[in-house]
Amino acid sequence: MQKNNHSVRNVKTLVFMALLVAMQLVLSRIFVIELGPYRITVGTVCTVLAGLWMGPVAGGICGGCADIIGCFIKGYAVNPFITLAAILWGVLPALAKRFYANKSRTGKTVGISLSIICTGALCSLVLTTAGLVIFLGYPFYAIMPGRLVQFAIMMPVYCVLTCLLYFSPLTTLVAGNTTPQVMGKAA
Image (cartoon, rainbow, N blue to C red; front, side, top):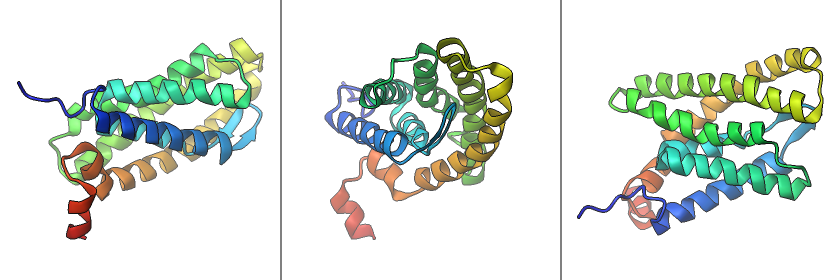
């Protein structure tokens, strides 16, 4: 019987998931610029990487856990639209990976970037905006122009950071079978 290295029950996977959730919490709840309905943060990259490295289930769990724990930390009520968006940030890029997994580095970069932009359009512009309008009472026409500007600014940042980290030795460490000792000898 062959072991699945990406199983959620695998201790290594659980440790990396916990680490990525903790990193997302720090990046999205502490090192953040909050401007009412707009939030400037790079914490979403952790959820995207969780999905790319460990699969869509792990990515979704990381996104959902980080959002729910983050709500408790900040004292917010859990918004189901925003929580669903956080889960999808980990799931959708991981599901799209099968379309570019066997491509060249350039093909993978384009695939990762397109999956992040498509996911961002759904999650940021549709679901999160709906959550802000329906549950928090923000007027749609007042916040949508700012959310479009936020989307236009943050998508290139997400794409660049995700690709830089995905093509780094971290991918071999997290998704591969390489131990930190072997990586230290290779460097």
